[in-house]
Image (tube, rainbow, N blue to C red):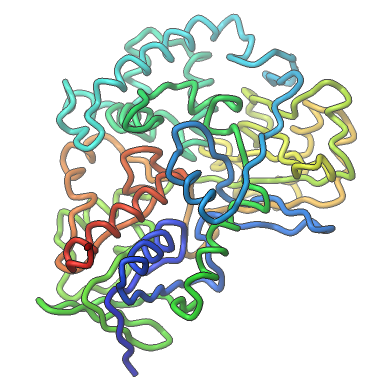
Length: 460
């Protein structure tokens, strides 16, 4: 059986649902196909009882992330401040030290990290976001890793370790995984068309990308978008093949086939290459998408009857420069009313590679010991532990974003957003600003909707 629509959207994450909403508002008949049995993509809420939830995927929003915040306001979803009161903690070689907001108090790393941040801020502002391969010295920057580039600035092991702590949660990787050009372009996207990028906007809670969370959880945005679309969404329908001619596209799923004038593929680029294409994807575009594999990231959250660490004057935030623990960074992830208490740790990059193969009981025990190093022994007795390893998600395979190795951006980067006939691309990795964030996903959905609306002449 074959059904028809003006546009088929593959993927019911924020990008796909945003695109569908915008196109439907302009009169296009849109249908969304989703492989999972839920909407939300890399955002998913987890029920912890008594009407409370925590986010097992993307969750934070902050200044200059205007598109996702505007969408939330239109949907009636409020934000609340992420908890940011009290002392932070720096854990190094088994010892925990408290510090106020800012860079951890490590005498061996502090001067280096200050120079590195200044250098990243300065050079990232020279990157033309829409065409980073045209940046000054682009080929030289793309020929070396971010680690090599940082070392040339006389950065010590301490400064590099702190950079990798950041990248463990931001990339799901390390500075050695990314080309210097990709790293600079990623940091250059931490702003908007009117506000220059700043490293502090990525690293900070107050005033930064971790400033706020959504009331009811980040997946609520997708749930509300899906509710408005109603029957125009089919779940549990992974797309297996896409055929196209000069006049139409056929999309084949396990549940049947759809025909449309155009298609939006809003799934991770690597997964897009696993669809059977007729005709085949352009070889250079397929080569790029295959190299846009995600980083490795898991989130582990421990639930307690109350956020007891706040009484100790602790924010619940911590930075770990300690190979004995799986956690690279940690946050207070409690609901807005402060009860129950939730501590959340990112296990990403190097830590994930070391701990993911271990038994779940051993890994979770190590996470709780990391939490106890920060807030004390009560952390060892949670009421429940939630672990979400995004590499184990069949329709994601990692997170939080694609990380481009040396040579990819200058050789293949221009093909990232090029439509393939009547097929268009969307997703957080297709955004110049806030690549890999919820705001990037919404931006890309809006952009691809505009492309298709203009192509179909639906604009008044």
